[in-house]
Image (cartoon, rainbow, N blue to C red; front, side, top):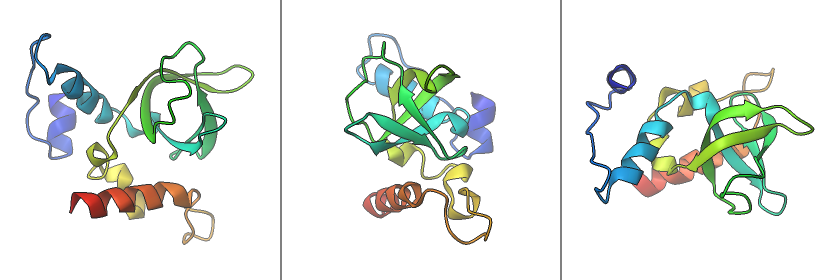
Length: 136
């Protein structure tokens, strides 16, 4: 984790004790710094459908997850399970503020269509721009 933090300019990781009130948030922040290709954004709350910005493919949260039906804007998963539908397994919610400074979240790194101008998923850029404006 120290390598990831230093690469993205996050400084050092502060460890938290299990009983600490900030323990859960600290773990979720660390997970947000993991490979970005596991981050998904909510696309359709009624059907619990999410989209992976990096691959531009639709996924759903695994039915065994406690987050099913929660309509969380951004989640990070540990792995993708292929079945009748691709499922994100072992997911946790993340605050988009934790993602906006990561290199894959920068406008020049977001996936674009073949013309090189239009974003494959404009909702991702809109969500990140709203978060940047709120954080500023």
